Length: 530
Image (tube, rainbow, N blue to C red; front, side, top):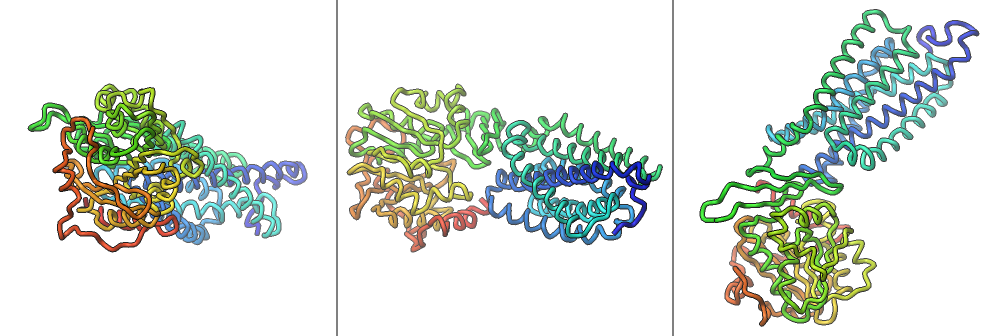
């Protein structure tokens, strides 16, 4: 399939030893370009999971659109094969620019334009189109060096392509994100992409480039370098500005940990409140407001403390606020906190405003913090607990939906001591009734008897909980006789909390399981628009 004089072997027998090096250079370029292409895909998926929370949905959109576009790109590349080297260089420069700036552009579309969905589809399509054009052009370039059987050439190219994809898949979570973060990580990959493409064309295939083509590629290289360089220099300021656009109050702390984006905001003084409003957000979801968090945590913790309570297990709640309430009972001997993200725990233990709010509870000698996945930890736990407090993020993401399944609650049941109680934060029975009653159905399916209740938390609205005990006899929803003095919850409020109005009566919805995470579908549908 040779279409012109081979640039490396056209010198006769003297040039013949160099064809192996030239072929190796092409395969190295395939390797690097494949790694870069997969990183672009993963970057779009990861950004969507941070901003939207729907990891499976985002992955399906990105991969589906990009694979389709790659097929279109392979067809579009057909007319370019006569000038394969120059076309490949232009494609790599374009891909480096658009891929390198893709995360920045999508973040801007989300923060300012409210066009994230269309922007994601458009970006995925364009990047897929460019990536799909690479292999046909590289095939032509490989054959021009030394013609070989089509099957052998395809095998060589795809071997390098797949191994390069493996490198990109491993480098993204374990190197690029930890070292550079998402914005700068994409810029680094864009620069590598440009260098790999230009290095191949300007060395092995330099004789195929006309003087005009060299000038155009040189100017394009300068433009790409300037754009990526400027984006690198301004990335930090851009991220701060864009992030602030997403929150009502000034952002005073922001960190992207291995698991999530952590943001603290602090407002000016609210009317009717003496203190400023400190708020914690995880992946954009509000976790608490310092103005009214006591309502939530009193309702969550104290009804479950009626009875034996020497050993308490807290799942989630790395902010230390639920632990603060638990430690108000002097007969609590041990509190085990299982929270996945050490960054949240570190924040709650070091930021003065948070420490003042949680009373330094995580530093209490009775408290043990384990930074691990709650589901995995429960599978091997041999301890027994009098009280289990499940204060976990809402089930609106794939990663958290498993923590609201029958299987998860069955694991909790296995670590409950005799007469033990479980309390679950269960979302809003007003805004998300199907989600709430599905969680109740899941707890009951796991072998518990439940008492649903709900209270008003102004920052959240009407918010619901489930108090449960193993067996068929539901627990008594009362405060302990020796409960400390509380700001919000009293016997009358708690009795009223168990009453649901007719428009929010129990719904007959099925439980959620690992293989059928119905609560995830409910949460996504019901919270849309809020």
